[in-house]
Length: 318
Ligand code: PMV
Image 1 (tube, protein in one colour):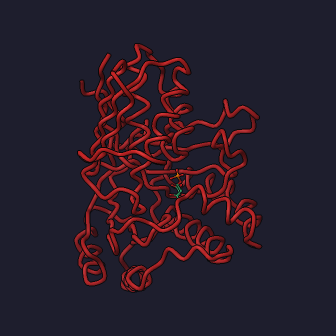
Image 2 (spheres, helix red, strand yellow; image 1 turned 180 degrees about the vertical axis):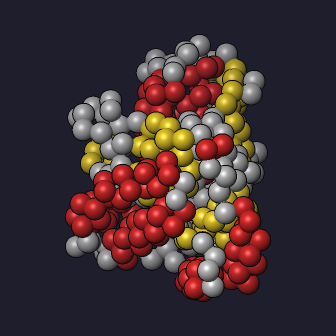
């Protein structure tokens, strides 16, 4: 009645922002992501314990964060026994580095296994989505597409692989501009954008074409084509964030400095392209050969810089 799983975060190349159904966590748009090696979440679930207990990075956790985890276990079995969940990250949590994606992917795999269930990847993806939308992409390694789906119950809103990590050896250079916890979480932020931003409909209307373009660029291994749609997608998402009310301004001065550094690199002929999530960090896609130059350009504006390669799927390790 105990299982341990490891999962990696994924960074969206074409973004998810906005929900078409809040309780089922169904997205208003499809998205495309890259699962990364280097960062990971390791989660052990003991199914059948004296009480529900959560530790994150060794610290006992209660309140909203614990309620979210145990509500997720209730989805697996509404009449489940109490459970212990111990989860550890080797990177900062809640800072726009996709810790909820790796967290709920690892939890879905460890908890269903501990409960004696054997779900296939698509079923695990559908389950993980209900914990955190982007988690449905971290069940797979490499390049993953999450279709928004059309079913009212969310049955067709799952991740599926476009190409595995070996298909295209790129680097995601992550500039940690500020590792503090983000001010507004993604669920609240998405609802704020949906209900207040005059740009929200334009964001949704152009997203499917961007995901198709990104998917084709991955298949063709065309970095300029992928980078172009990636950077446009992130800037459109942030335009919807900035024009929400109250505004969602996740950017810090270092964020803007990193963006200029990326544009300067491009004007020097380096094929480097930026993306950002619900936080100040800047993630730059480039070839392995250019990763050192990109790292050096970002370093003056960041607390630290990580160079991450495509990673594998979530896996059971015990
Ligand atoms: O899965 P969530 O609820 O943490 O939302 C993720 C939202 C973004 O990171 C901003 C974009 C994305 O597609 O991952």
